[in-house]
Image (tube, rainbow, N blue to C red; front, side, top):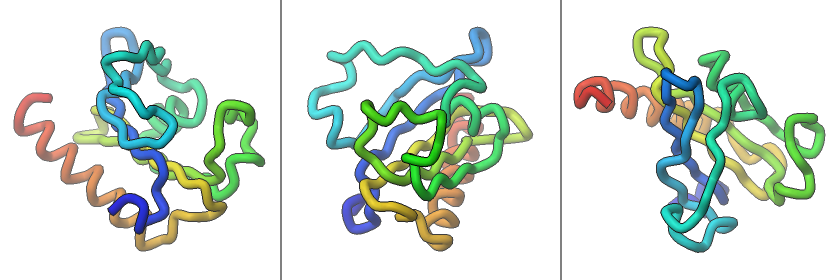
Length: 131
């Protein structure tokens, strides 16, 4: 399904308000062929890098060409575009959905709306279970 949408990486991060970091909790990605439990993936500090900045702003970010973005380490990314959606409820950050594609400008307005809807549904569900 993700391949049909031109999504090569789909990652879910949860926000820890105590230390103001985001930790990856799930991923469907070609670049991580082994289980996340076996990897040491550093947390992302709120406000740092693409994901941290989108999280801090509480606003979805569409990057049509990652090669033109100074926050991307080019030697570490084979993706060309990204869409980052903060998961927010009552103006409070819960987490972030990060999607990336090997195609430039892969995230159409319809796909962006769908990802925003997924973020909203996730926020509602997480709020109900108390995260």
